[in-house]
Image 1 (cartoon, rainbow, N blue to C red):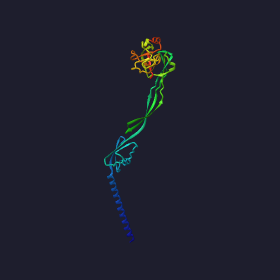
Image 2 (tube, rainbow, N blue to C red):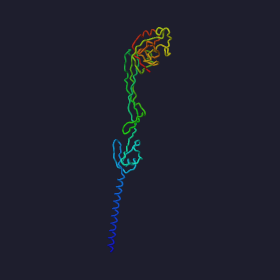
Image 3 (tube, rainbow, N blue to C red):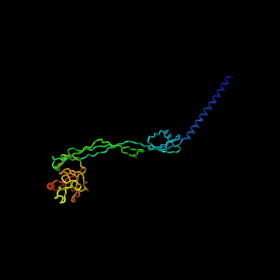
Image 4 (tube, rainbow, N blue to C red):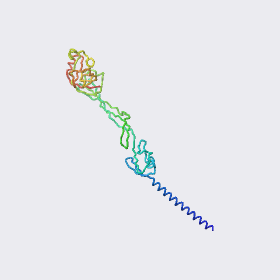
Length: 280
């Protein structure tokens, strides 16, 4: 009798267990079906490619995180992270990167000319070869999807200073010892004449004062202002340092009239082709 009751209890237990398993399987299948039904097709455009994923996430941000897509601090996401996801949505990620980049710029060397009485007039001697310098320029650059979109100058630093080229040239002009080497901004070949402040050079009404108010004489020269601006400092080979302080009716184009203190000095100079260094 007891055996029969045990068998009935065991049978009932088996039935209950079978029903429970069947219910669990059915519930799981229902959950899977519901989950699959809630998933959406999403297209993600990033890093030059197109990726298709299915997701059950409800927002753009959660979808990207679920898909393992990393977003940089400056990257742009379209639509925004809080936008709800719908079936067929396209999410675009624009990569934005800011970098400091540098480039090198060559610095030209100056040419310094040193007059000397140790060389004959017209002769030159290079005593030091020039060397270019290097400047490093820094820029803040923004790249959008790998393409440069903005560049802003940040700073510059000189890596190597340029070394000037020094040339000696023969000269017997005045002022050599006190002035020393100089750097020419321009070098002109000009036809030169000479004058003195007196009436034999400038006419009976000459008062020795130039059009700029300077006193005429050695070191003050007349030029064409269209070629050399009045007030410009010059060095004339064979003459010395001078200032463009006067004009003249006959001084046109590449002509220069060199001032002397006496008429005889001006006559002795005569007419010559000279090399004029513009210093200003």
